[in-house]
Image (tube, rainbow, N blue to C red; front, top):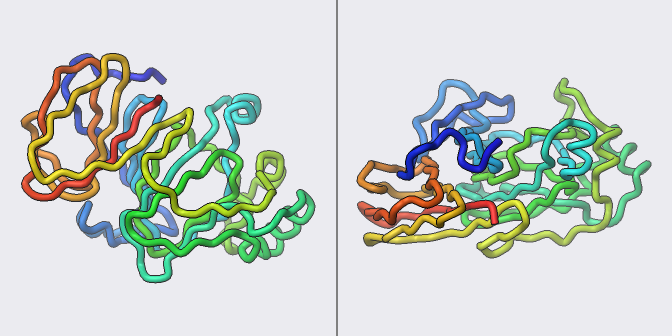
Length: 268
């Protein structure tokens, strides 16, 4: 996948969205999208880029899972690895995420705990609220609880190894998961933006007045509107949209109709 996809002009482009039904998804997509008839778990902002941006909506727990790094994914899946981050858009009271283990766990214990379901109790669970952000490197065993809406920014890869799925009849991938999982103790907590790693830089911006945006000469940006509406380069935008800012374009203005909050992300 190229860094610029099929974009040939230099003006901001609203990325198309794809809604994916999931057993753990939610019909409550407000205020970003209308209420859904089916359980929507993910909304993908589609572009031929090395980054993938999603909104994730949960009414039930997702599987306990892990993603491989680049080397393992290239050798075993002909794919990139998957390092990701989450920005919490909405959280029901008591909603939780799990990132890593509370204490070290060996490979055999990990296998046994995955088969028995004990793994759920071994994870480092964190109660979250809107505005929290989390960095999840490849190799980190993790889980997302119910009652959440997240913005996920990740390497453009869909390689997921499930360790435990609460009895749902989906395939597990224990052998590969155990090979790639970091089994040391984790003290992961919410982090302050910006988040900066070799795969993406992500920061949060707010404005209630006109803002001049200056594209970089050799680097695309993705702007993800979390709240608010207005115009971007003269075109209407609203919350729940992601816009591709091609490299090398002319400066343009973002004109909000009220307070606007947006994430900006790019490959460093």
